Amino acid sequence: MKPPVFRDYLTETDPAQIEALVRSTDFFSTEEIAIARELADDALTQSDAGHYRFILVEKDRQLGGYACFGRIPGTRSAWDLYWIVVAPDFQSQGLGKAILDQVEAHIESAAGDRLYAETSSRKQYEPTRGFYNRSGFDQAAMLPDFYAPGDGKIVYVKLLITR
Amino acid sequence: MKPPVFRDYLTETDPAQIEALVRSTDFFSTEEIAIARELADDALTQSDAGHYRFILVEKDRQLGGYACFGRIPGTRSAWDLYWIVVAPDFQSQGLGKAILDQVEAHIESAAGDRLYAETSSRKQYEPTRGFYNRSGFDQAAMLPDFYAPGDGKIVYVKLLITR
Image 1: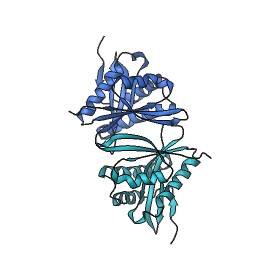
Image 2: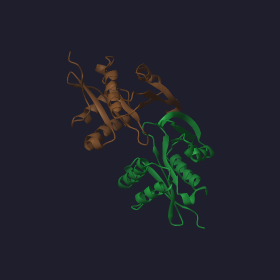
Image 3: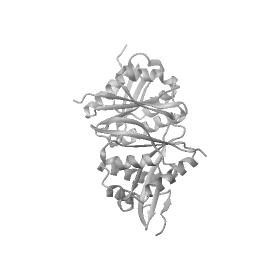
Image 4: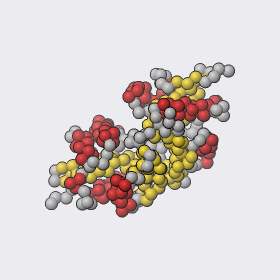
């Protein structure tokens, strides 16, 4: 089996593939899927001038997963992990952690020293929270009822190593 | 003295005036001033399709202050107060509270029921935190060192009345 192939740029076919990938997880709302697509469209148009950075991973010539992240405006060196998604067929193989490693390497090389990630407090997101906990993130805040009644937002932070 | 005049739309001269207003407070970084300007430019171009809503207030034919706010994507009914700024000449006259009242009325009429605001934990922002505390906001979270070492982010929330 070939190792996964990472890249940090988008090609013309990626926004549609990202949309299909996000939809295939059955994890995201219609609005969230539209946002994921829009960010990819914007990043493709704006190239390096855009705010959003991407890491994509291909495995067996398929888009296996991706992350979207960016420096938080107004902060000295804090970044946000907006999206990290692994295709259902490629889950539980360490691909999420491998994508995260690439994200962190990019942020550290840009002198970023903290990475924030947000997720829901709902039961459905237990695997997501488990992923952040296993990957060195700590819970920094909990905002009850943020997304909807009974659906709070949990903010995670991971301190990175400045090189 | 004439009462302040509120409006919820931008005209062509507003982005430059907003930029000048934000700069005049001596409260915001160059990057923050650029963001304030960019949001106004975008809102003017995109009109109702845009994400960002504005409330502006004129007093004595000058831009006395403004707020920029928007529904938080992915939430059912949560909104973010991105900017609320009052010109130095018009501070301590209740104009900030009057702008906030207009913001809340707009959000409530769009069935929004919670308003988030973020500010810095630095001493310089004591008046800002005092404003939120007096205006019915509660502290929901504190993220240490978010903006920079020693400069944390405080998240406030105010529960609104759904009509």
